[in-house]
Image (cartoon, rainbow, N blue to C red; front, side, top):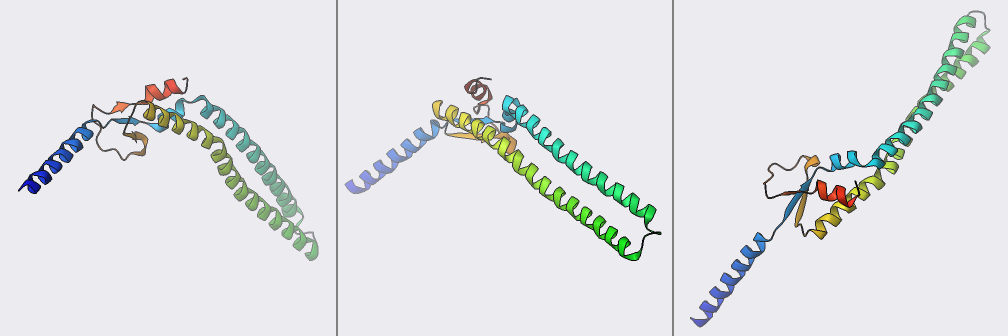
Length: 170
């Protein structure tokens, strides 16, 4: 009987401790996409990315212009050219077209890589600020509202945006 009372007492105490711990949970939320939009580094990265994209577009326009010029010349001369020269010009046009397509594919890849390279440090800085604020203010969980997975948000959940902006000096 004594043993049963001891077990009941231990279970009751652990249940009480669990309830007491549950009351100490602190929840916060932030919209990380809005945070990133407010960071001045984001605008600098966007400007650099646009400049890089413009360089690639200019190169593609030059290649397109070269193709159009040579194609127009080919059309004007095709009837008067010997078969061998006509075939050589057609191969040249095909080569230019293939180079253009390869350049276009590599340009898209490089543009994506450049964007990731420019944006990742900004994301890391924002994430670190969120983590620091959460740790300093003893939050148990912080939910990202931009992810779209939060179905309900209580009034007890604290918006971390002002704290994170302050941490970032914004």
